[in-house]
Image (cartoon, rainbow, N blue to C red; front, side, top):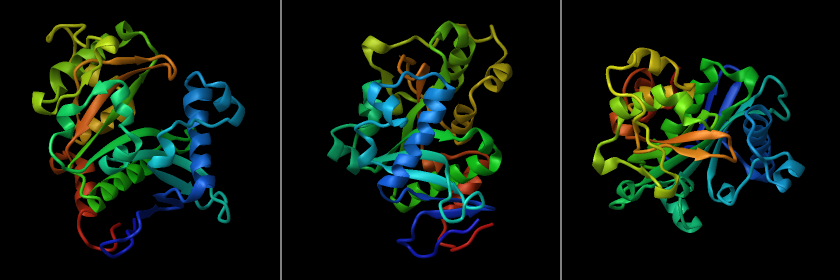
Length: 273
């Protein structure tokens, strides 16, 4: 896996035929939005607006003010490689121009915004079905880590989702997250009062925590491996057919194998395999 050299290097990584970088221009942003539409709407049952259905793209008012990590398959079409993975990134300075973070529609994040440190919102993560393997996800995680390093990010956060809108069906998983991974009060987002769903469905000791963790969606498990912590309360997102939780990750306290990947990218070495 290569990293372009220099302090102001471009965000660019490769792994086999896959290349990760920031989307360049409106055509690549639209391609990322089409991938999001395929995953969120066609595959997972989100409800598009008439404009989204006509365009076959997932888009909102935040997209043009964000950076978008994209993974391209250079082997599938060297001249016009398809986008097979994406992540939307919104820094504090970018959110100031937009007026808010996307997460603030669901959660109060005032505790995360104290002081002037750089923070980064992670969102709209998805991968095409044929590319849902370790290589693609590791490339995305490494890209996030490199981006955070380049921009001096001290705190990352965002919403992660369970498929479906019945909290009772995932009561064990929600309880596990609250009991074992709740963020400390000074860093704890809280679901908006009118959207707040209690996560404490089962008492500690009444379920198997290992089984509960195993049942979590892959993205949430990935955040936990990075030392991720959970906000107070879940939120139902009827448009996306999901139940959302808020994740907080401190890049300086990453844990496990993902941490080693991020730590390598934090160095100034121009290459890493």
